[in-house]
Image 1: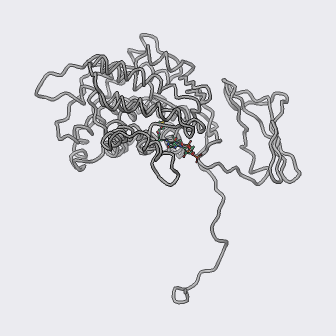
Image 2: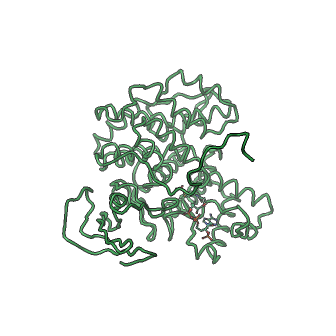
Image 3: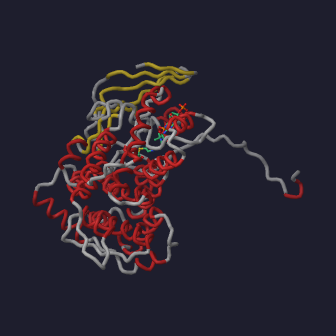
Length: 457
Ligand code: CMC
């Protein structure tokens, strides 16, 4: 491969083997960068699925230059053995297992184990893991006092992020990420266990309904639904169709390698801040409408289009107009440039769930399908490789399940927690990791002298 720019030529070639600091990443190639006539060599790292990176770890030491990459479009921040995705081919694997198989056959809690420990659990390991999660599902009673003081219309994502951070004050000993492994695992179990409880309380708080305690004889997903929808006054039976759909949805959202919120968790964790605070920051990142918050935006967008008379072309044109800030939510992805495999499963699940719940008329689904059709035929979307992403259909499923729009991103956060803690665990166990600290190219004024306020013009 060969590229060149002013004063700089760059090419890669194959050379002999040398010490490989990257587990399961081959380094038989080298890249050369020529800067102002001088040649520098850097190792090329090849992942287990053949993807390649130039290790520029010594670039600044050797050349005085840094790289500049807005939005980290070309920057690998780590090696990782957890999730593989190929955006060109529309492939997503967790620990080598295709997402399609996991969504079809696995339970969310099995997937959580897989992401954390690298292998699917046997029966005994699964029972033990479920037991550990169940054990920690209650939250401290003092937490209720916090919940009571949020405004009644507070967004549940704001509440969730604050409450997860507050867990660090309840478990002060968990501040040290380098404690013995059993203690670190306990923090991880606490987070996975308490997340649905906190999410459900955030929702109940919003409604002004009494909080429901976890019922530990129920499975993880069923328990979550129970805490969300049961009332102390009447019996509540979890609908298996809804539980199945939620299980699938949680699996699809569980991990997605170095996305915005996961990178946030890793960078906060890299300062050795405690895991609760790192995950709280991840929740804040996920809330943004360009990331997990898009699932709420999609439904609100579809409702706006419907209320505006249903003229889809008008909204597609608005999305294409560079002078209009409007974007089609649920479309486009930084990595997927073919299709988002999660969106395919989500679209199928959406039809199944509506069918099984006997919902024959869902105008938002009709609108979504029409919008998808029009956008996928439009040259603007085709040429930019903008396809429906995971969030395009998930909101319709969640709506059919009776979950209010403000809770959509919270459900995403419950799912992604297992990805965040797995990625954090991988990071703290990796001796080569350093504090995350990007550099910059300064573009402000050069040095100048202070002028007394009386003498300033
Ligand atoms: N509607 C209209 N135009 C779009 C859209 C969209 N949804 N997405 C991208 N574009 C255009 C963008 O204007 C740009 O055009 P041009 O080349 O003429 O300047 C081009 O496509 C490339 O977009 P970009 O913003 O440079 O791409 P990115 O990789 O930085 O952004 C994205 C990815 C997901 C933030 C973006 O596609 C987007 O804003 N989508 C809508 C929000 C959304 O659905 N987010 C959920 C992502 S999936 C869930 C998750 O994992 O977070």
